[in-house]
Amino acid sequence: MNFTLKFLGAVQNVTGSRHLLECDGFKVLVDCGLFQERELQSRNWEDFGFVPAELNAVLLTHAHLDHCGLIPKLVKEGFAGKIYCTPATAEIAKIVLLDSGKLQEEDAEFKRKRHKKEGREDSRPIEPLYTMEEAEKCFSAFSPVNFGDVFSLGEGVKVSFHTAGHILGASIIKVVLQRADCIRTVLFTGDLGRINKPIIGDPEVFGQADYILMESTYGDREHGDPEDTKQQLAAAVNAAWKAGGNIIVPSFSVERSQEVLYYLNELLGEDRIPHVMTFLDSPMAVKVTEVFEKHPELYDERMRVLMSRNNSPFSFKGLVKVQSTQESKAINHIKGTVMVIAGSGMCTGGRIKHHLVNNITRPECTILFVGYQAGGTLGRQILDSTPGQEVRILGQLYPVKAKIVRVHGFSGHADRKELLEWGKNLKQPPRKIFLVHGEKESAKNFCQYLIDNTGWNVMVPEYRQTVSLD
Image 1 (tube, rainbow, N blue to C red):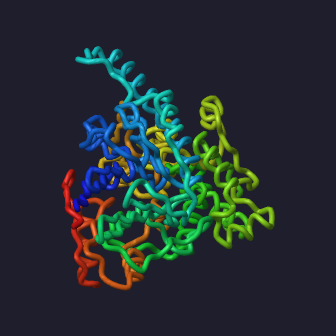
Image 2: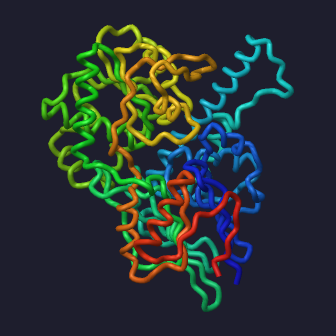
């Protein structure tokens, strides 16, 4: 018997999720995500740490770019197996990957033009990590599986997907490995969601597991009350309206944008904010919202009630879903306060950069952060900036003069208390818990927190470390 696990991403950082599970030569990759922290982006170009052609399968927890964004590169370099995930994840991942391919092409072209303008000679051609065409080539590999269905990947390897409550279609992956009379159950939480969040159902709990790969993004803190989140959002909108400036919201196209719309719809219905024209300026977010509307079976009770009353948060008065570049540019000519929700959520690419250029130097405007900003990202630099400090956007420096506001509580990640409570459903201690998907200090603080509160065997793995599950 030889069960091993290799940690190839989201280790002491929050992006690039990738874990290789091997069972007597049978190789399964759980997630294949893009590194988004600026200082780690070079890892996207490195070798995978295994031979892609030797992989038997890929299991995908959910469709965020830091979990699926390197799949086109994996296929380009020889992977020819199937990618298993839930139906909603498959639909959203295809949208996300096409958009990512487009951004990779645009970023490479922009860099070529900038270098030419600056008179810089590149030692080698600037090429995208992958193209839209290469992203599309991996679509045929997706093999959707419904929540709860148990399927076999091969002799002694059984898999099932369970609700994670993080984004639409997100799953906790349960892998059962068996050789002779030895059985090991491994849980991959992916990004574990929170209970009582709007739109989607709560995370599923488990009574038994031998090994758990648990996220630790918010392992060193606790979220506030959801009502506080609404109050913070209302205060930010009202203050911007009074100042006469725009509200620029960097937001993930998947789940976060839809959740912001949900709360705006509620606040408008409660007459707690003015009717600010709101632009969902992301073709990807618009397409993802359509996927949400196709999967009412994944809604929680509150969302079902809203939809039954024809009060969809995806179509309230004043909401404009922007598709074309021309429509996006036209927003800059509107007088008065508007809200612009655009990707990417950490300001690493997409239309949000252009909206930042047009608004970040204006004191009357507000940059409103509604999600986690990983270290090294443009979003984190803006969030941590002091008034007047310069940040680089699209190759140029801009002083931060806009009001910077962070609304807490929007996160789709469980905090340390919620992670602990989820784990306490186990009837007996697991053999080991591996903490991933958290910055170094967060993961290590949560490691000690878990040990103090449970006495379990917990560790924070190193990048590219291999452990035995014997």
